[in-house]
View (cartoon, rainbow, N blue to C red):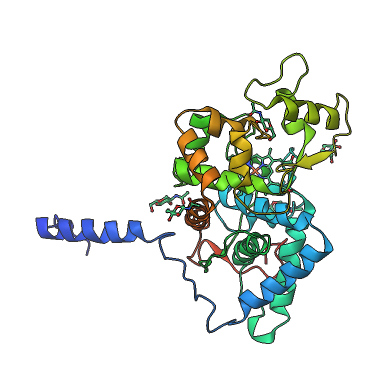
Length: 331
Ligand code: HEM
Ligand SMILES: *[C@@H]1O[C@H](CO)[C@@H](O)[C@H](O)[C@H]1NC(C)=O
Ligand SMILES: *[C@@H]1O[C@H](CO)[C@@H](O)[C@H](O)[C@H]1NC(C)=O
Ligand SMILES: *[C@@H]1O[C@H](CO)[C@@H](O)[C@H](O)[C@H]1NC(C)=O
Ligand SMILES: *[C@@H]1O[C@H](CO)[C@@H](O)[C@H](O)[C@H]1NC(C)=O
Ligand SMILES: *[C@@H]1O[C@H](CO)[C@@H](O)[C@H](O)[C@H]1NC(C)=O
């Protein structure tokens, strides 16, 4: 027989409030761990690094494309390899967002090849997520290019959703100013200092002429740009240039992961508005100057920032994701 449930006593209310608070802290909060695969695939780090090394020997495009893929993965739906999923008959995936000159194929290929190498070891088959492989490969290209090496936290599950429409508003365009950059990174739990440190990834890789064309128009060159740099860029990217033409983001040390990015900014040699504004805005200039002068301080800040980037929106509960057998397709 049904009877009215008694009103909960005040002490029960307190208890259930505590229980609710504990539950709320759970999703996504299950912490990543550096030794996550210690028992299931103890050699995962060496396997991934070997593939990254080979891939870097095959093409230097591996460097920029892999690092950028990690950033885009984390900022859209969290670090869950959703960026690697392909479109299906009735859904357009993140990677097919209209901005299709954007993510270079070698980043995807790095993850696919590393996943195959991991899965070829019987104990490791279907044990390691694509999201973790991308996080490891990113660390490896940075370290192998002269940047800092660091410990990578692991245990991300691969996401179940990849939609082009989810990209809108999640990634910074190169026209952003300091406040816009700071706000977008804050939405991902990253500070302004994290944002400045992570922007230094533009010390490697390429950018298409269209991404900075507005800054080098002969009639209106961006006054914050070094005049010599502006004329070099105009020569390389004349009006009507092939849209596939891309230039080095850091022409001084294009394949070195170093603090040259900040030295370039001090010299007016940031390629995007979003780069140069870090120096031209008085609020971020002291940080840029400090890291231009002290590589050690920059590297420490970068390691802290990319570790926090690797935690964005991660999925650790089996209801939220799984370990994909093929990084490009849902299981
Ligand atoms: C702060 C805001 C940022 C903006 C506005 C921005 C914008 C861009 C743009 C427009 C390109 C050129 C794409 C192309 O033409 O193909 C690019 C390239 C690149 N970005 Fe960023 N980015 C930002 C932050 C980051 C972060 C946080 C990372 C990684 C930690 C990153 C890593 C890269 C890399 C490595 C490349 C070269 C890609 C390649 O060589 O294929 N960027 N970025
Ligand atoms: C389209 O989406 C529906 C519902 O999610 C799904 O059942 C169907 O298999 C999809 N069709 C294709 C061709 O992907
Ligand atoms: C980008 O996609 C559009 C529409 O799908 C296509 O017309 C265009 O040729 C593509 N551009 C490149 C460079 O692939
Ligand atoms: C322009 O770039 C050159 C080479 O980096 C540098 O020597 C010069 O000081 C820069 N000019 C300005 C105004 O920063
Ligand atoms: C960089 O800063 C650290 C302190 O964070 C200091 O110990 C070191 O001497 C500095 N290096 C240079 C080259 O100024
Ligand atoms: C930011 O941090 C909070 C508190 O830890 C967490 O609940 C939230 O999911 C995080 N957001 C992202 C995008 O990771």
